[in-house]
Amino acid sequence: MKQKVIIGMSGGVDSSLSAAILKQQGYDVAGMFMKNWEEDDTSEYCTADEDIKDAQSVADHLKIKLHRRNFSTEYWDHVFKEFLNEYRKGRTPNPDILCNREIKFKTFFDHCDDLGCSIMATGHYVRKVKKNGKFILLKGKDSNKDQSYFLYTINQHQLSRSLFPIGELNKDEVRLMAAELGLSTHDKKDSTGICFIGEKRFQDFLSRYLKPNPGNIVTPSGQQIGRHNGLMYYTIGQRQGLGIGGVKAALSEPWFVIAKDHAKNQLVVGQSDSNHLIMDDYLTASQSTWVADQIPEMPLRCHAKIRYRQADQACTVTTNNQGHLKVTFDELQRAITPGQSIVFYDNDVCLGGAIIEESNRLTSTCELKP
Image 1 (cartoon, rainbow, N blue to C red):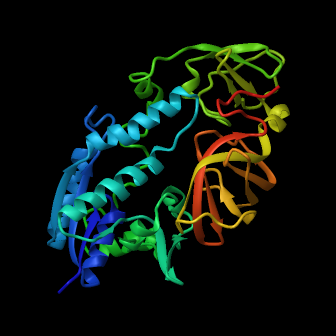
Image 2: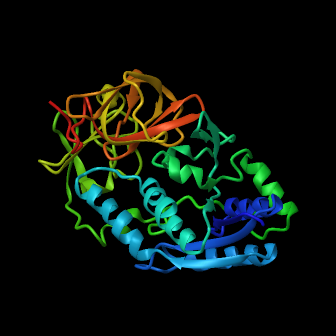
Image 3: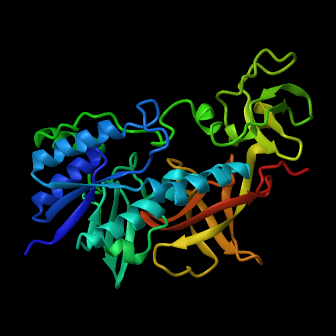
């Protein structure tokens, strides 16, 4: 009897080819399209209608059943509310990590169980192996597409029930194989935005749920040089969209965000002569999770990323007297951002991660320390 697998099908080429590979490997394959957003279900923000048509087209081509599930309530309660709460605190959350933790590897699993299926699959660019009785999460072979950063919250039980069919492939191979198999999504553009926001007009979207509070843009010395639309719209290190130009006696170089002073509602910005103000060699982090379901022996010598696509950075991890992780880097890091995730690696092995709380330079509310 064939083993039954349900694959999350988003209407993109990655999940489409994953479904095809699983069928070639002899699994009894079914797809599931997850609709996660209802609030503004228009083409301006979300492409769910187009995506479900593409997913159905691929399912028909492969002659597999496509289940449709609406997870909008779960998404609102467990992802979007947390997303808004973090912005209210002046932090910068990562909704993709929240979505994987709460929807793709929790709610999706529950629905697989309801359908009598013990194994699920996704189109993520990651791999897994089993060693000494433990499942290990590995980076995808394609270093440009590796998505282990977004999956660091996965645990042993979830990993044991998961398959990642394209983890050994690079993107060009995925598109070529999809074209050879006649999949209609083989040349579909990759999605780069969050469904409920899309790729544009972030400020317009966020202002519909959180009240903007405009204030002054100042230099580290306190000189006012402009106005901001609300601190929630900016992140540490940001260069684009600051609206600063022609400041007298300033360097003819780009401005970037150094800090967000919530007490004074000020956005602190600088230029190249302020670079030292945005560099730091350690941070603290909370809410740590480990793929092996056990805390590693400390101190832990490993590598880490403080943002997706960053090169691995050598570091040492310890715990402080509050039970948080303290991460000390071998080299100074630019724009450590509270609310973002730090993810730990041992070569290609994803060990786990945590949420950044503060650095030596920044408090957890993104205020610049005196």
